[in-house]
Image 1 (cartoon, rainbow, N blue to C red):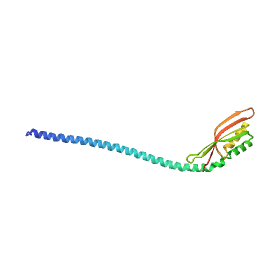
Image 2: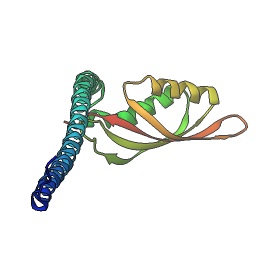
Image 3: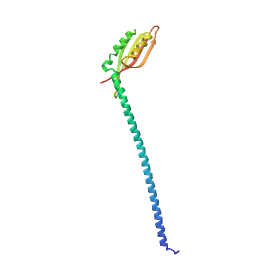
Image 4: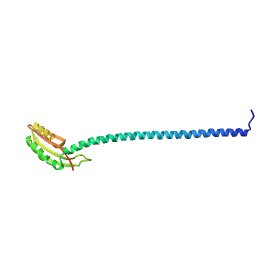
Amino acid sequence: MPTMPKKKLYLNLGISLGIVLALFVLNSVLARDATDRLTTLTKLQSDETFRQDAVQALVTLQKDSVRADRYRNALQTILPSQDDVLSIQKDFRNLAKSHTLTSFTFSFGAEQAGTAGGPSSLSFQFSARGAFTDFIAFMKEVESSSYLVAVDSLNLTFGQKDINASVRGKVFFNTP
């Protein structure tokens, strides 16, 4: 085997080392690029999953909205108008008389405007005196009346023969 001069040996070693170093740098760059692309791909897949879930939620909301509109429309036809709701005072007074309740007083409170297609409400308070069974019959008729009424509080004070009842609530109505 012939001996190579040192210069040629160093040149070959330098070229070999340069090639190895270049391959190492290229490998590092390609590995980092692959990692970056994998991260981007994972994020894109996550975004796509989120979009699919959002679309599915939107489809569900649209279906529920159609169903809610049917109930909203039914509610709008059931509820009295703002003018009609004011006759509740006279109607409840007549009901109280028909159930032999005495000392019937009725007053309106604050009006609360409806929100986003929801009904408006008008608070009220009434009190009456009479037999417990008559009061229960009166409240059953209030419940089955054409008014949508929510009772917020009911206070009963029992006497020897009859009761004193005080009721706070609200009646719902349709606003144009």
